[in-house]
Length: 131
Image: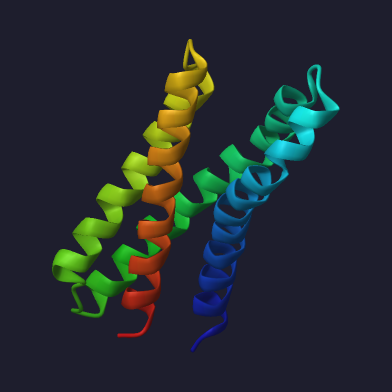
C-alpha cells in the first residue's frame, strides 16, 4: 500500500469515525442531555454539527477518490458499491432532514432513518474493504 493510499484510507476512516461514532454517542447521551434540560440537547447537536458535516464532506471526497482508484485498477464493487453509495446519500439526506424537521416525531423518524443508513453504509464499506 502506497503512502497516498494510506492517507486516503486514513482520512476516510477518520471521517467515518466522526460521522458514525458521533451519531451513536449523541444517541447514547440524549437521555442525560434531556435530564439536564433546557437547551442542552440542541446545544450538543449544534456542537456536533460543526464537526459532523465537515467529516461527511471528507467522506464524500475520499469515497469518490476510492471509487476512482477502484476504477483505475479495473476493479468494480458492483452492487455492493452502488448500495453503499445509496446508503451514504440517504444518510446525509436524512441527517439534513433531521436538522430541519418541524416536529419531534419527524426529528425522531429522520434521525432513525439517518442512523440506519449510516450503519448500512459502514457495513458495506467493511464488505468492500475486505475484497
